[in-house]
Amino acid sequence: MTQKVPKHQLSDEALEMVAARFKALSEKTRLKLIIALEDGEKNVGELVKLVGANQANISHQLQILADAGIVARRKDGVNVYYRISDPTIFELCELVCGSLKRQIERTSSTSRLFDQMQ
Amino acid sequence: MTQKVPKHQLSDEALEMVAARFKALSEKTRLKLIIALEDGEKNVGELVKLVGANQANISHQLQILADAGIVARRKDGVNVYYRISDPTIFELCELVCGSLKRQIERTSSTSRLFDQMQ
DNA sequence: TATATCAATAACTAAATAACAATTTATTCA
DNA sequence: TGAATAAATTGTTATTTAGTTATTGATATA
View 1 (cartoon, rainbow over the protein chains, first blue to last red):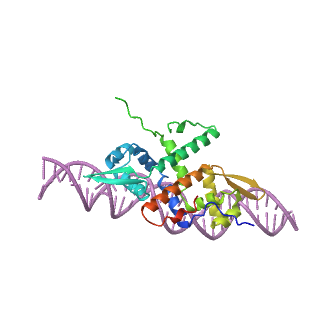
View 2: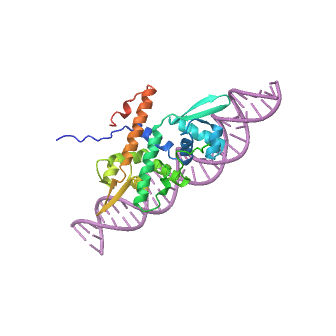
View 3: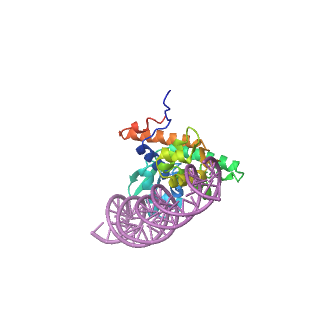
């Protein structure tokens, strides 16, 4: 009799890291920042305008994304420019959008919410 | 001059749903439940033993996963069996694990944490 | 050097939530 | 009907965190 080998055997530490990555993506403001950075780096002031939250909060959320390894920073004079450092997050977002779209279609609600998502 | 069309133009409502999906995956106990359900449905008692948290908490976390459309329930007598209803979460987890593994390798820390992840 | 601008940080508040104990509800079986 | 079991729910506590205001630090410029 062969012992059953679980496909996923991640340590608590690894699970914590996976959870942390998902947590970084679990907030609307941070998702907006990521989307705003999709077409290239932007400085904090530009992001404040685009996302529509106050400067302290944007800085805070950018810090969280940076800690999670999702964005990186580059200082240029008084400005600080942020950019996406882990492009896989767009694959993640697309997977989730696709899944949500199918779920909404299945429940016969409006499925147009995710149509703009390629 | 052509107007720049952003690739991702999701409404606040859609963003909220994406964030909620990620939030459901942002907790170690819930990730353990998902992994425990990977090889087939299990009832609450089995999950309590496998995950190692108390029954009330497991029920609560399963409720959250069910609300997110990630798991589904089936009642059989006194037992309630849960199963994965959205298999794309495994793709999500693998993307994240791969990304984390590369990040760890890049920072020259131990990258063995995610080796068991196929 | 003085001033203005940009971003980060500190201090705080309000809201969300993970975890637990105790209770309730539903089902099975004696 | 009455116990026994399984799962859900309720109430509570402690922790986390998004957001705000005010302040600080750093850089550029007059």
